[in-house]
Length: 266
Image (cartoon, rainbow, N blue to C red; front, side, top):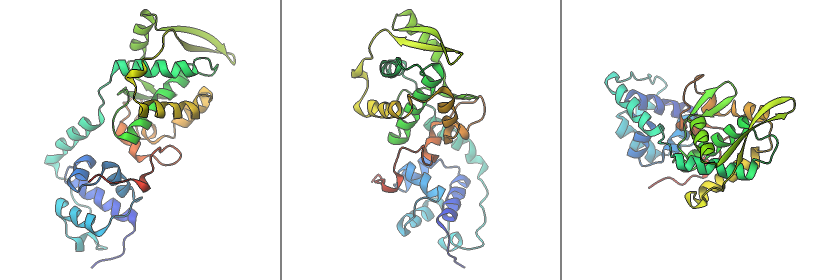
């Protein structure tokens, strides 16, 4: 017997059926011809599913519409044999390939604009890099620098940062200094060369500029506290790598994408 379901309940049931089939969001979205971010919003209950989309879902996920809409719908069992395939697919989607050259130019670009600000020490710099990378990924579904970040107590920290910076110091592209800021020792970086702007697209500098405009005047404590409520950081385990895919689960004020007005892929 059918019943009236809320958007959240429909989204929850679709997610359960997808997981039972061992499918990633990317795989399911592609097969029903919508974008992955649209599917994310459907599963969260933030987006309406029309009857045509529900019909496509019923065919691909192999469920009866009557059973799906029934009050007695049962959470389907996971297909164990497909779990490994699902994990590998999600890892392939979410693990970025870092471009050291791009990261170096982004770092120089941020420092060119912010190095003179007394609050921009290493802690603030980490967060400016993190929000630039994750905001770009949420907006364009592709990586900016491809840097990988770990969840640490004071917020997200880019892996390989020290190695890249030390190489830049050796090439005299950066200078590392220690200063006192409000009675605390602060590590700062001074750019000795300009970024190669031919390596950065207009869409990339636009995202970085927005992050700089919003956060570059914040104290280390303020920007760290802000990062702690961002979904990618919150949903990750201490010391582990932060998955870029979690950017699609952000809510206001962290989300930089208007999902409600999103044009679906054909």
